[in-house]
Image (cartoon, rainbow, N blue to C red; front, side, top):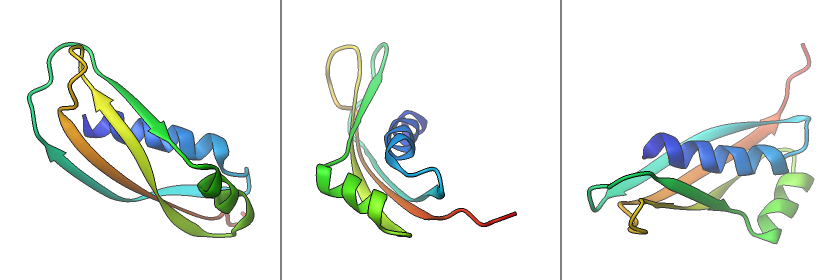
Length: 91
């Protein structure tokens, strides 16, 4: 479940971050509340303000909202993912 939440939030950060920035997972907070049954899905969301911040600031961090549900539509884990970004270093 943690990997699913991290992947979902990382994807939404990555597609909204300019190519000259490097996304970094900074913090993962997970509270397991139920046993998951069947297939699972994760939906991550960014606000317009978060996207604007990512596209205009050289570095920063945001909390990315993510909902993980199982086949019965139950949310077995409550997640908070903190992502940061920094400029890519010239190599």
